[in-house]
Amino acid sequence: MNYTDGQEVKKGQVLFTIDDRTYRAALEQAQAALARAKTQASLAQSEANRTDKLVHTNLVSREEWEQRRSAAVQAQADIRAAQAAVDAAQLNLDFTKVIAPIDGRASRALITSGNLVTAGDTASVLTTLVSQKTVYVYFDVDESTYLHYQNLARRGQGASSDNQALPVEIGLVGEEGYPHQGKVDFLDNQLTPSTGTIRMRALLDNSQRLFTPGLFARVRLPAAQSSKPRLSTTKRY
Image 1: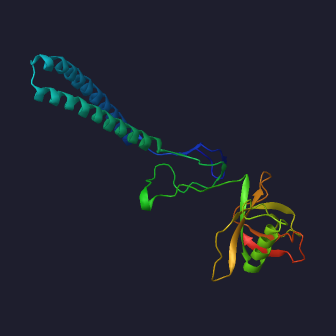
Image 2: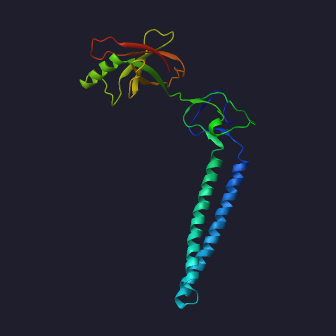
Image 3: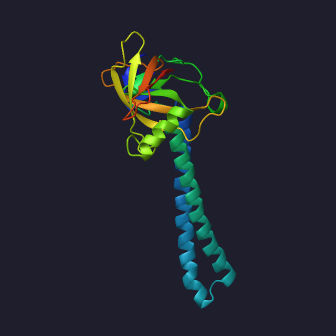
């Protein structure tokens, strides 16, 4: 483990290191096989070149010449296969270092030093990482409100579904009004028939670390040159 629980980490930072002895040995074995394949290919090519000269003087048979040429081609294929094995072994070794895919705050480590981790369908969760620079607020809009804003966009009075730049106002529990501003950056491609709503997402700047993922927020959409009341909803982000 290469970080402190709750620490803010940078993209590319190593968070965990898995015991790499087995994978390092596999890489060395693959590299040795590649070196052997290259040596054999060099020998096969030399023999093929030699028979190229001798076949014209009938010192070697046509059949032997074809066998030597085929062996040289096969040796090159063996090199490519050995190189692929080296690449795969190198990837496995690289994967023993678990790195942060984004900038964010890491949670506590769920696996500590010396414990066994697994991959695949039963993969062990090592920790969770959430972005801190920006946060998303997900909320649902009813069908009539969605159609209202679509009509505004068609008339050039609001944000279109293409650029999705509709402004939103955000308020947290305990705050008066909606003091935070954001922009809609995602609009789903269909309504949910059972609820008659469509999912939207707002993006908020969090450079001041005011928002923590998982909080509830009140969301309000502006009326935008219309007498229709603003939509107010409460969702978790």
